Figure 1 (cartoon, rainbow, N blue to C red):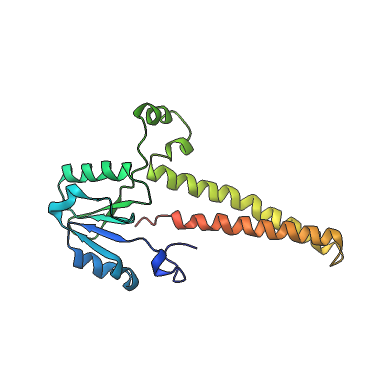
Figure 2: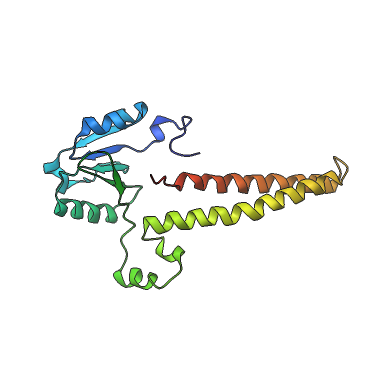
Length: 193
């Protein structure tokens, strides 16, 4: 299930904090059910965000928030627990740049990751994490599809209700479950226009 599923209860969806910018223009672009979760943070108060009482969630940062305030905000979010998802909205209000800081880490640890495989870089880079998740999903899906086909062929060779058929059905059900989990990784795909 992804966050955009209609079956997700509204109470379990993340709040939407709008720091600066045109809150009404942004609210108009949101799905109707999301509009009630918008919380305004004035541009002049960006340096205080997030205060300790704020619930982690989306953080839309308007283009009118100064660079120093944005940097401070990102540093504070990096120190906070929870699913903070900052997004910088362009001046024309039509494009968003996800910023998603990872958790704070020692610079030496991050520097060491620059020489590692993509999975090491993905911990600190949103874009690398997306590409890595896409590759992992693809690499899981192909052999999984082949394994499911083999199990289904083997099931045809055994009498329904036999011990072997029941064992194969258990394997088939588990393979389907793994396939469904891999399909959930589609939620991390970003459409590029």
